[in-house]
Amino acid sequence: MSSQYAFFAGILRFVAKKTAAEDPEIRVMMGHLSGIADAVEKTGRFMILRENCESAARAFAGVAKFLQERILPEALADGNKGAVEQLKWTIETSLALAAELVKRIAHEDYAGQESFTFDLPQPPSAAKPH
Image (cartoon, rainbow, N blue to C red; front, side):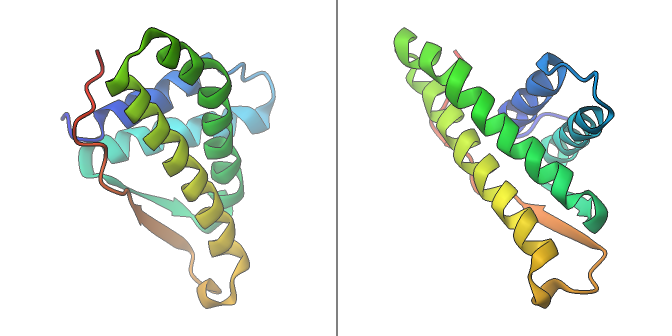
């Protein structure tokens, strides 16, 4: 089922596939990205267990870094405004999710909560992949 978050799910899957996952910890992080991609594509939200928050936060931070360093410069050079808008939204959203995941496991307001559900912000409305 396609949704308004299909581009975000596609980016998460792309990063998960492009990341060398020889290290077991990195494989876990890329697994989080794949699972989150499936959930957000269908519903615009995802759930994560407390025990997975730290590795999922690192995975989102990695997505942001990868996009900023490798993909965004190419989209800017090509002048693809829709892609640039999607990439910037994905970078900002990934960094915000990484910070919120860390906050949830560190802040006493969330103590005892075993899982967390996250709704994604509205995606860029005018963005088109090509």
